[in-house]
Image (cartoon, rainbow, N blue to C red):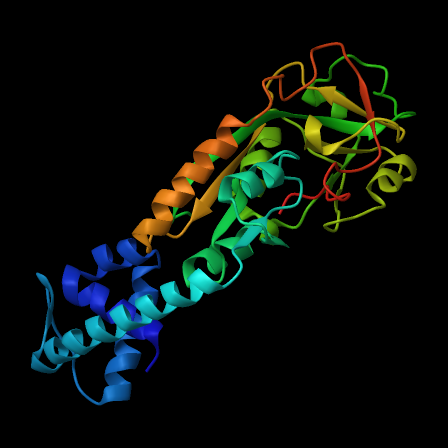
Amino acid sequence: MELRQLRYFLAVAEERNLTRAAEAIGIRPTSLSQQIIALERELGTALFVRSAAGMTPTRAGARLAEHARAVLDSARRARESVREERIPRVAVTPGAPPWSASALWRGIGEPTLEFLDTQTAEQLSGLREGSLDMGVLLLPADLSGLDHVVIAEAELGVVVSADHRLAQRNAVRWADLDGSALLWFARSAAPGYHDSIRDSWIRAGWRPTAIRTSAPRRALFAAELAHGGDIVAVRPAWNVRPGGGLVWLPFAADTPSIRYALAWNPADSAATRRHRMVADLVRAERPHAPAVLPRGQRDTASASLEADRVAPR
């Protein structure tokens, strides 16, 4: 019997409704039902009386609920005690705002932090399981069971090599990208963000001739754009820096945007108060300058500001 099973069981016992319990813990009702059935098989007894009105604990279920509360409370106190002694673990998705890590360090106020380069999808699991304290991740994402504050939002633009056919433009339209391939990222890294931007280019009527996946922390990002033929990337302006033979161009219309959130698990109420204060500080420390370059202004770039991490995760 695992703590996860007890947490699922107790959610159903308290809600007395499978759908509401699944929403409360952030999983699908079918998955929750399978977990309850597996627990009943393991214990060799029915834990609920199922009816159209919902799920009512049996006598065995009521007894298990008492023990489950005590076990989960003990586990929670043990985690809190250990967390007080361990180094805070903060995940940051590649391509995150360049000022976010420094702001987090100042906001948390610990001399030592463990920063992890972690995909958005992996962060969600780590936050729910308690292996991460906080995470800077891409939106939209399934944040059920987590608290979050949006800390940054910016327009996306097009990154091309300095000798690309579009490089001398002041701005581009989606139609200008016809005939170009797209340097993109694996959907599994950040499904919600991936799909939202894909929907943007579909609505605008653009179809890339090919989609090439760029690996995270790819130092060859500039080389792929420079030597990969007619290929473009879609990134925020802060992902590039001057001097590397690339050009960042704003969209003239139908501009997609990128949003980042600081997320955490609200299970620890004391930590939640602290995390919300940190989130407010990080949001307040956003640069006051525009997140994108003014229309008509060009910039060159070689790679990401954050250790050449250019692929969203």
